[in-house]
Amino acid sequence: MCRYAFAHYKLHYACVSCRVSFKRHPDGTRGHTCPNCAGPLLCAGHDFAAPRRGDRKAWSVVTAVLNAGLRYEGFEPCGCGREPKFRPRTRAQLRARRRAAARTGIPLAELLGRRDPQEPG
Image (tube, rainbow, N blue to C red):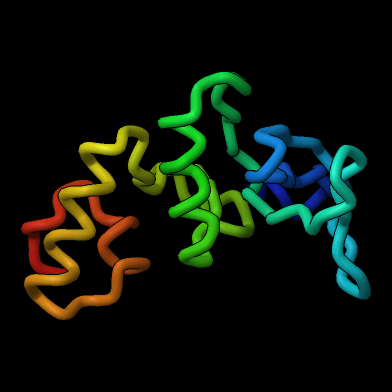
């Protein structure tokens, strides 16, 4: 049974410059803006857990993940899949994936989604 098929859940949106997140309904025609700085909010997905506002290191990792075009989704878009998708949580994990991307030529966005950057795709 599809988890997200029967109800319209709000998505998490984050402003990485202000280091805040909000839950909003998806708006396809225009993007959401931050109420603090009026900048654009980045869609972070259904299962985003925002770090504390003062944790600059964790927010730098969130910024890299969101700027790579990835979202924090624990389920498949329809909600059927139960395999949580990996996203780096520490700067050490982010550095390892950046080094692997530079060494192998694989796009960073693809390596950010892998649990182990050394494993073949």
